[in-house]
Length: 302
Image 1 (cartoon, one colour):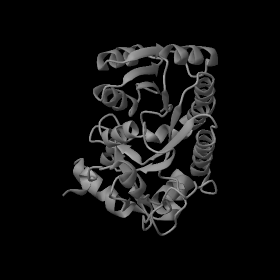
Image 2 (spheres, helix red, strand yellow):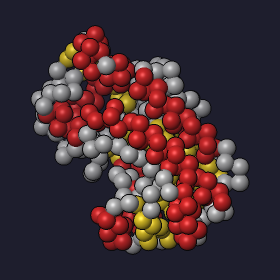
Image 3 (cartoon, helix red, strand yellow):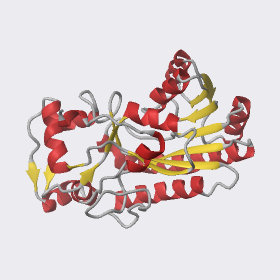
Image 4 (cartoon, one colour):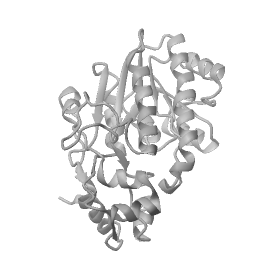
């Protein structure tokens, strides 16, 4: 299959392109950087050196690739989550405006299927695991609500694409090489410096997914029925469980404890929300649809 990957040099883009090539697909990866271009060529992909904000160049590159499927993995995330608030507006602009250019170019070029990255961790499902029928938390704390609105717009766009088959992949928090949640990642550094406390009872449930499992699931999405799929692991865990185990795994001291009021004063309402309100997600649909088999969350042990 001929596949065009936007965001091809990012955290998921690189393992995704590698897996697509390994499985025999003809891949064009879109990137803006010299390093990204060299890495993609090394994986065996063709390279489109264009900005997502240049609509004409995106369409030209897409037509040249003769892609049957477009995979939108566009993000503009910082190297450290502590910088996320400052990066949020640029990330939203890239996903909606840059991704919009890609989407309309795909329609104009006769692309058959469009696969969209979205979120599996801002879902409405109090007290249970969220399935694909659950919407996103557009009524949450300010930063979470803004992200939820962005993902809601992306899902609406791809699932109502008319002539194209639309697939929305709700990934959990990425962990693995070149992500925040890895022994050499930014979150591990925060935990070692005791900058990431347990807030209140820390009952917010998080769903993670290994970056390589996410890549495998995305390749499977080339042929599954159109719709929404939660791409998360089998170990949804409250912060009170996963964060101390993560600290132990990366050789950090146990995280400090703070009250919700203390966290709200120091880090804001979003920090409290992440610790106390997030809902985990169910991956049963992906398991049934294409045999998704995520690995166990590594820091929880055997």
